[in-house]
Image (cartoon, rainbow, N blue to C red; front, side, top):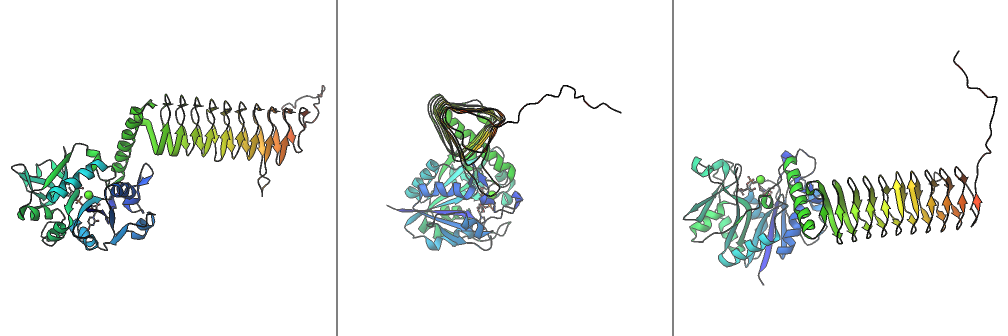
Length: 452
Ligand code: UD1
Ligand code: CA
């Protein structure tokens, strides 16, 4: 099988991003622009070369894959110069696929088609028709055949009117690429080595340039500034939302849906507006996520209700459970089947058993709560002594009265009851009422002070 080599151009400064970070490290759906390009390149190509320049170390360090061939282009002398840096590493009998690191939404199927066309006829070019082609290289055709590419800055008036433009994606047999790169010169308005000049060289050499025209302008849209970054983020999110809806997820408003990671879901799940999924999230059947929730790296069971404004991270929520509104479920938490965690409840590193309830205004940290437990409003597991964290264990069937503090380490026995307002410092036995409360007093003759 013929080797396919990706040459990803990533040396540009990205001045218009106005950032201290190299452009290609800005993200779409939490994945860097460069990583988006690499993911596609690795699917289509057997070898990947990245031409980097600006803040090179940061760019290289951002990628963990050890198989990437990094090529430094210390001065950005044009796209032709950039590609010239990479070709010495590529065998003649192969196809080179030139990609841009700042074009994140390119489709694998498009790249595959481009490579197939190049295998057949030597050179292929991906183009797009744009309402406003300004800034792009125009595709010059004669009798419908591509003759050359003229850069915007070099275009004459009639050429400027052409709306078919070069996307930058080119596939070409490497022996031809090497041959034509030798022919290009800097005799243009920017005094750069234009890669695009190889097209005319190929035509002069008697070749027919194959072309592929995409109708999806976002697929070939590059990121030059933060406005375009946001546009492409939205395009990515909308496409993803469409895929999820086609797979059966109900999304109330795909314009207000974000998933930065991988989302799996069962049948008849509903996602209301402004929900953000991050990392790996799995949802069972018949579950609903209400508006303004953030869910990260978590597993949500069947028939779960996540009510508005809840934040869930690294947690497992059991079948039939209800969480929120305004719950914060922090990492390493497991919430049992049919359990309820209500408003203004924070839970961290805690297991809550089946059918247990923590309905209002509580904090549970480093706790193990059994089944059928009822935790009243304002209960706090005092897990931290200022130096160390300690565990709270609440056994099955316990009832913790409102506004109680459980000073950990502590064990609350099975079916025990803690009287409201208690500060519990020692283990509470099973099946008994435990409380710590100062006796109530009434002073009948007491009068409120009055203003002098
Ligand atoms: C280029 C194409 C133009 C096309 C447009 C599509 C050329 C001469 N022009 O123009 O036909 O319509 O892209 O977006 O190829 N880069 C390097 N090293 C360099 C120069 C550029 O790595 O020395 C990288 C940039 O980081 C960028 C890509 O190559 O990712 C394109 O370079 P850019 O300067 O943006 O080219 P354009 O003028 O936009
Ligand atoms: Ca550009």
